[in-house]
Image (cartoon, rainbow, N blue to C red):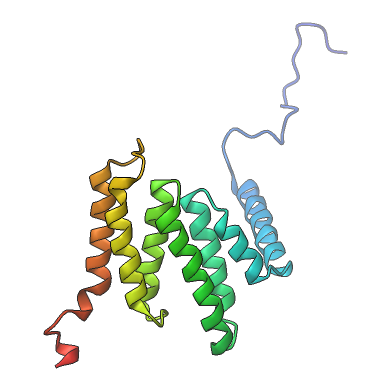
Amino acid sequence: MYGVDDYMSQPTNTLMLDQPNRLIASMHYIVRSMRKLSTHLAPVRISELLVQLEEVTTPARLTKIVNRVQNLLWKLPATEQAILRKQLMIALTAHVLEGPEVLVRIEAAGWLRLLVQAGLVSEPHSIFVTLVTATTNVEQRNREAVLPEHSEQWAYLKMIFECFWAFHYPYPAFS
């Protein structure tokens, strides 16, 4: 019926669209929703997340795991929260003091700062000691190409200031 030089007038690849449309966008939304639903249906224990946190190698993964841990902690009684949050602090402190990558160390320090500011740490002085120790240890570490040495120190000093500025004297809350 069709010759070699004749072409069909309708495209045969209707599923391969060059521009996204509403159908494809809605399908992507459904798939993402199903993926999120599957992560909520398959319960992950906090202890497993803490093990994953100890092995993390990127700042994005660290943030994702800490967010999941925090989400699970909110659903627990206060006594269990305190114990597991202390384990979270230990893991984050280990990343700050011994982490091999600058960006992961800074992200972990940022989480420690945030948790102190939110009032979720029972001993904020230990976080202060961790941040000061990290600041002084920068010179002893191998230099990495991502951030110069003074930038990492500056990040830690800024976190110390932001975290503990509220505790300086005379502060209206303490008068």
